[in-house]
Length: 518
Image (cartoon, rainbow, N blue to C red; front, side):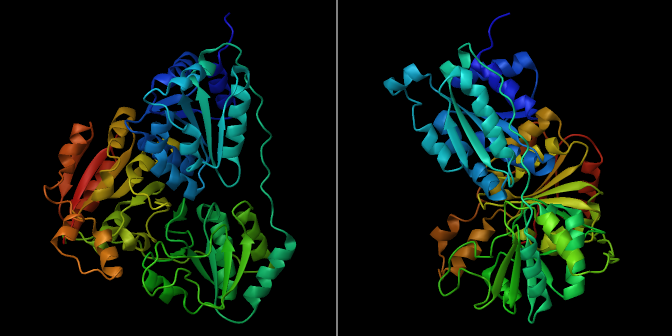
């Protein structure tokens, strides 16, 4: 039996740590890793036709599976092409292990065309970066990268593997690091939160992270709100939120600064649970960056690295909050044959969602009201664009379907951002994933038109030409079919709701181009 090479030790170490999916866009320097994946058969290998598909899918996978996948990327250009969705994943605090090939060490002196600073490119979008130095330590490096990715909250770990280390013998499968214990919040902090809730003034509990995806924690928060009058709020965009009938509703802080200031303007106290203090997405003339009112008292009940779910359950018990009782709320009614707009879109989606569905939301402008309109739909999970780098939706839905097999996924997708990573539809077809993609075809970068107005500009034709994508019009039915995915076009809300229901009732991916009433 031949001695194990570095690539095989890397694959086996990751698999022993629970990694069973590899999202890949490999090149020459990764061929020995590709060979090791094939020979061992230990991972499901999912090909993406662009690096941004690979990393967006790994993000969606983590959000649903609750554990890291690995990616396979090619040199510095591969990392930079992957960067936008690594940025989104980092903001979501998703755990990912990136394996990045590097030139063989003896080749680096020749400044070959693909030579570049792989570590520098990786630093921007990673929490941890290491270049392996020996075949014998590739496994140890992989085990450390995986421990970082699994930590609470999840992190992006990037391991750079020079090609000569992967093909050389001497690989050793490393032992896994002990499972991390998530720190509990100190009792004194629970006491402070209870005192703040018992005091004067209006209080909001602003929550995100794992708490927003934990139904039992949400019920505890609803108990606290019922006992104290505190409001439950979340940031505009979140890694994962559990929602729907029987699940306590949490109000999202609006994207629009003026609406955020109106929502938050009367607060005297703010308690944070795995969430940051709210700030605007951007700066605008004569508007504040910080959205809480001056003088608002702030308390962090649980930081990003602490167990927020445990903290809110303990807090609810500490203040002797009554048991949670779900409010009876009417399920969304199916819309009639009205034009598709912000309101009817929410009705169409809410009425069509089956229990257990996963919604991946990159609806941008049109979908701001959809979230609220689905609050009484069947219980579902909602994944958002966390980092603001558009082009996440279709790849994220791809990974979510792999991370939650058996659960139908619907991606509510703006048309402009769909074009950043539409190649992910091909991966959905190849893997026969149950993903319904609803393209909101308004043929505009509508969000940017609003931004142009907010900064005080008076746009003329040249400016508007940079914000409109209808000349020539995009045809998403043809684009989808060209990538192997069935597709249809609808122009009214009743047809949209029917199409979503029918798509989720049959296996495989499907695209619905929803023509938006302008």
